[in-house]
Amino acid sequence: MTERKSVIITFKPKDQRRDRHTDKLEIVRKALTRGTRAHFLDATSMAKGGRTSIEDQIVGYDVDHYDAPIVTAQLTQREIQRLQEDDNVAKVEDDGPCHAAGFGPYRHLRLREPGDCPQAEEIPDNIKQVDADQAWGISTGAGIKVAILDTGIDYNHPDLAANYKGGVSYVAGNASPMDDQGHGTHCAGIIAAARNGHGLVGIAPDASLYAVKVLDAQATGRFSWSIAGIDWCTNNGINIINMSLGCEAAPSALELICNYAWSKKGILIVAGAGNQSDGDPVPPWQSNVEYPAKYYRDVIGVSSIDASNKIAPNSARGPEVKLCAPGVDIRSTLLDGKCGIGSGTSVASPHVAGVAALAWKAHEAAGIDNEGVWNLLAHTADNLGRPGRDSLYGYGRVNALAAVSATLPVPIMPKGKCCCEDAA
Image (cartoon, rainbow, N blue to C red; front, side, top):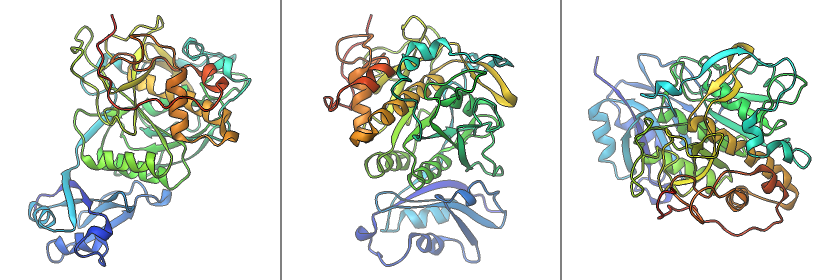
């Protein structure tokens, strides 16, 4: 059997194509070897996500937007060459792997110490560290839709069930958004574990949770799955996306769909900056921030701090970091109704997503949008480093109370790379 590999095909916008009257899926099919059958799933449909690949078919996803015309497929080298030579195609890229931030080589950041959740309702110290509990008199994030692009969510967990509103899976061979690893469930609890009289409480305890499963049971995935997941969010009214995942390299199609989601669909995207080995910091003029957090235009990259508000030794850092949040020994929900400990920027990112949900709801009547929420979070953050912004803490630690209490409008805060040195 001829070897096939997964690729991401980005087309030119339709009015810029030589063959503008032919659908992009037909262009792909014309490039296929004679007799090859192809089946493409609509990436925006909840019902069609996560199907198993069939040997005698090419199974891929169709992302159908003017600003992000993307198709993913498994192709032979000859078929790839035909598409690369097609004037309608902007780029054909390898569909690279990604992983939950902190997984990969960083085994010391894995989830640990699973055990029973508190019998009485408990507000963890990290929730208090960002003043979320002080903000609940103004906002609990009710009705704000937060999608967690991760390993899924254990939607039967007693602390999450009330806020879980639906999900989709793009993991090959696994059509259920149920978490079978734990990472996504841990992030979900930080964002929106409910106030229900028992267990842990999250930052935005009435926000709506959506599981968009793009990582498998080993907390690894492919960027095509994340692209399809983001596309689903753009068509299902999601307000905030949390992506506690990444890699050192990514296809440009991922940036394209992130920019589309933010700029055209009004979605706020938050991502963990990534991790490093303890005691091995990068120089201030360098960066080890991973994609998609590295996209300075339309993704909020988040670094990790400890309980003393110092940068975590294993947090990535670089000029793309925009905000920071607690990320050391964070207790949250795990599989099978349990609770446990996690560290890294994987758990820092959902703190920012949760505070964003509180702020969005608090200022919803004023017509705030994702850009407004971004400016609010950056303007009201507690500065922990050099004046303004630096490559360790960004603008600073998110402050929920300050964000929900602020008077609008606030100054426009630049999202581009900072050019300052590390804080001492």
